[in-house]
Image (tube, rainbow, N blue to C red; front, side):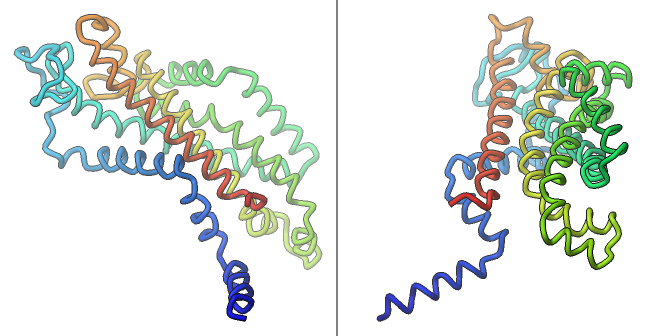
Length: 294
């Protein structure tokens, strides 16, 4: 009898569980996503607290410590002018994470409104926005980012803008497709029937229902943006020396791969772990936010 009474209570508790709590419960069940989240939190904490951790000055040169191997003094060794590689990797995380987050924010702010307009209004608005999006997607992502960064000038801020503009078509197409799938639902028809204007229907009724897909795409795009920023810095179009950046560190390390391989190993490992963590987190969020997932 107690068991039969407990089953309805469990069903009732599951019914009143909020979508956010349900998604968090599903995400916690995925060990890979949680491990990736822990790595990202650690990297972000190191990046934010870098000036207060008592590390070596990342731009301070020391000719007595040129290309020293990893040791108790220099955990990741030193570079070609005696700078501490560990300090430069930690401070370089600030540029990479900032580039990833800011670039994706630019892409979302520009792409989501265009996608909403194209998907909900249709007609010539949809045709114009879609053709422009197709034209941008016809160009390889990295090639277009390099072209825009070269046009704007070499700096981290311009690299963020270039990456953000290049990533915008991805969010335009995703938003448009989701809007086309949602706008025929009953709740949208009901909102239209009571006299809501199109902008209110798009913002108050359609946008909240496509946010999970946008969140997953944003997480995956941050990983792409980090690789793009490292590539631009490697080519001299991103963060400018002597300010540390993972891409510029790899550029300097390519001349000393045999004499000082640690100069390339640790920045490359930082890029690998960060990008892998964002991808694993994105995959976990996709499963956790899927209403059809068990």
